[in-house]
Image (tube, rainbow, N blue to C red):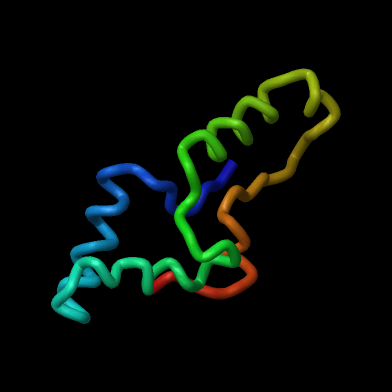
Length: 80
């Protein structure tokens, strides 16, 4: 499973630093999330739910694939 950015204190801090460097205002960090189709970082629960699905019997016939939980970012291009 591959996952994009998800909303934790560390990840938000990593996004706010480039926002400070680029715009001198860390509150503009939401601009860095616009490449996501949902225009937000994923919730920890959303990533966890995907992992739970993959280890459950609901995905017992799944094999040889990569499940990407990225809020549609792969379809919009790189984040930075």
